[in-house]
Amino acid sequence: MSLAPEVTAAAIITISTFFTTFLQYNTQIENFNINSRLQWRFKPMSDLYLVYSENYLTTDFSTKNRGIVLKFQYWFQ
Image (cartoon, rainbow, N blue to C red):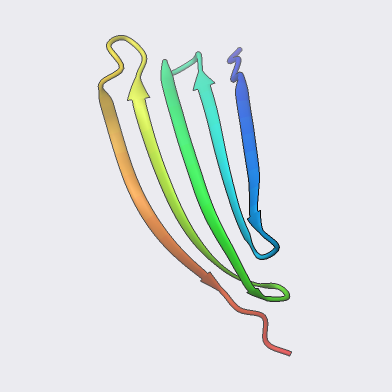
């Protein structure tokens, strides 16, 4: 059985800009994950996301991997 404690924090910067961070620890694979997302809603149901993710080994907190992703979502009517 794996326990995965997690913490989420969110902030509204403006009426259309949001920032969210998600922290998670996985006891089964001894992994600690940080995931931060900046979201800009430029139209209803249309968003631009910038996501940063980083994984650490819990034995010495060395970086396992990291990445930056840009995601574009547009709603056609």
